[in-house]
Each structure stands twice: as C-alpha cells, then as structure tokens.
Image (cartoon, rainbow, N blue to C red; front, side):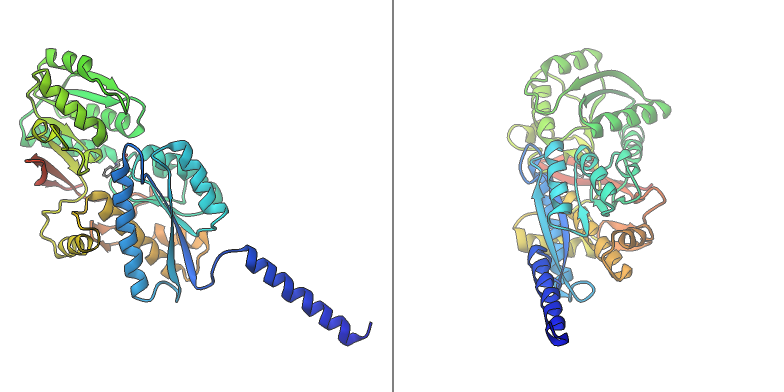
Length: 381
Ligand code: PHE
C-alpha cells in the first residue's frame, strides 16, 4: 500500500469512529443537560408538579437570556411516582443514560435520601429544593439544599406555640415511616420541652392510612391545647376532618409538608380553620421579587405558586450560576462553585451555602383561613 492510501485509510477510520461515537452519544454540543426527579404523580403529586413548574420557569428564563457558557439548558424530568425505589431507578437513568451534568430533586426528604447516594457515587452535584431533613446533605459533598433544616423548623413552631399562641401542652401525631416526620417530631419534642412546653401524648400513623380515630381519641383524652402533626398534606387533610368528627376542637399545628392547594380540599377547609404551619415563603410577602415571580407563575400556569415552586426556581438559578462560574460542566467544578455560593439574591431570600451544604434562611408561619394560607409571622434563624 502506498503512503497516500495508508493515510486516507487511517483518516477514514478516525472520521467514521467519531461519527459512530457521536451517533451513540445523544448529547448535543449546544446544550447543557440538567436532570430533575420529582413526584409528578402519587400521593404527594402537588410537591413534584409545583417544583417542576418552578424549575421550568428558571430554565426558560436562563435560556431567554442566552443560556450558560453559550449553550442552552435542557431539562430532563423523571417522575418517581413518589416512591424511593423508583427514585433510584430514575436517578440512575438520568446519570448513566442521559448523562446529565447535575440534578435537581426532590421535595420529600425520604426520596432525596434515596437519590443522593447515587449522585454522590457518580460525582454528579445534586440540589434538593425543599428537603429539610438534616441527614440529606450529610450523604456527601456533592449534595446541597437551598432551604432551612428541620431543627430550625422545630424551633420556629416551638417559639410560635409558646410565645405567640401561649400554648404549652401539646400532643404529637407522627408519620412513623417518614424520615421527615419522625426527625421533625424528635426535634420538636426536644426544643419545645426545653422551652418549658409539655408533650401530653405521642401517636403514630403511616402515610396512606384512612382511619385516624383511635389515635385521635387517645389524644382527646389528654386534652391538649394543640396537636403538632409534622406530616404531608394528603394525610393531614383526613386527620383534620376526623379530629373534628370526634369533637377535638384545638388548633392543629404543622410544618412545610402541609403546603398544598389540596390540604384544605373538601371538609378540611372548615376542619383546618385557625390552624397554623411553618413553611418557606408567603405569597402575601410584598417583596417585589416575590410578587414578580407570582405574576410570571400565574401567567404561565394559571394558578398561585407554593413554596416548592419558589425553592425549585432558586435551586435552578443557583445551579446555573455555579456552572457559569465553573466555566465548564465537570461535576467536581460545579460542586466546588456550589459550595462557594454566598449572598445569592434568591426569590426565597439571600442564599448562602454553609459548610454543611445547607442554606440558613428565615421561616414563615401561615394561618389557614377560609381554605387559604394567610401570613402570620416570620421567624429569623
Ligand atoms: N420539607 C419537606 C420534606 O423534607 C418537603 C416539603 C418542602 C414539603 C416544602 C412542602 C414544602 O420532606
């Protein structure tokens, strides 16, 4: 074979293998792929739908201003149906098949705890918008959150009960297989009793239960001034109705897991009147950033945003900012930039990521009034 033929054969092999490689690898050079896992269906579907809407708004906004590093952001969303096992499957898929460079997810702590070890092992940065259980970010240095954690949320509700409501005798009703619920209940017991409060009874349920009368009857016999229920909205809706049916009239106190338009559906609208819960944002907040976001959200989705949507928007924006600063999409560089996030002007407040990869932010307490959530007070960290 002459020299020319040898070179042209070699070039041919190089070009065709490059072609085959590109054809197999779906990534488009003009796009940055971001993964999202969320409960778009299942018993906490509004959590996933709201966070997805918020993230989608962030993606649209960054793309309309030219994207990041000259590329458009493409969001690949997977529904985990609200299940930890399905979470593992979809997170593997996002990383191994779709080759995303970072992941946003989830709202519920138990699902974030299922997805985080996979992201950590693959060195793919993960930001949970709304998981408040402290253990989520201890999984590793690639795992971040843009919200406060539950020991603070427990402090907020303890202070609110004792200082604002003059309530010192409380019963607890806890979702026993939900890390968020049991963790927050433990934090509350410690902090509330430390402030001079008394826990008169502690009852358990499992998410998806339909009959809470036995637990509520036990609680009623102790005559508490309030019942603290750190659970998710689907169960709290039923619990509130059954509490009133057996003649329990005291207010119910809760936490961010209550936040959904479905909390007050049906008879729960009356059952929850005058009850309170802590969460991340109030749509009553007059801050221009919040009101501007509400306007944009309503224009696109034709409804009011809730906390998850605000937080997912911020999670997306912080991620885009970190990729921009990293200058490339290497996991380790994105992670290093996320860790340096300081005084980022988010819509949910100024966000600084601390050494435990958590955000330190104030919380708000909302009151249920006529089926709506009305701002009551803000409690600073
Ligand atoms: N904080 C809850 C959890 O960790 C999830 C949640 C956040 C729910 C915000 C509603 C609003 O499980």
